[in-house]
Length: 67
Image 1: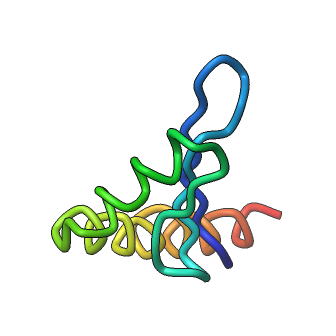
Image 2: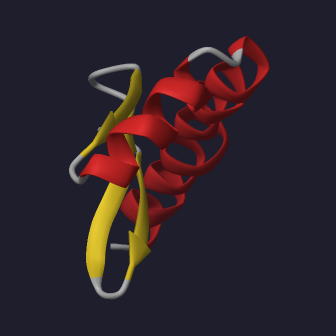
């Protein structure tokens, strides 16, 4: 299971957090700068990492119980 949190500007993906990578990755010049800033914020990174457990792992059990 992978948690992905993507940020778009003008229909283009600027920045993405992926739980398998464990950090933000930028896809545009602007996105690279934003990702660098966000990756230097330990509380933001830990919050994003916690989302995998809060959202994905919780809901996968609910999903499998209903299928």
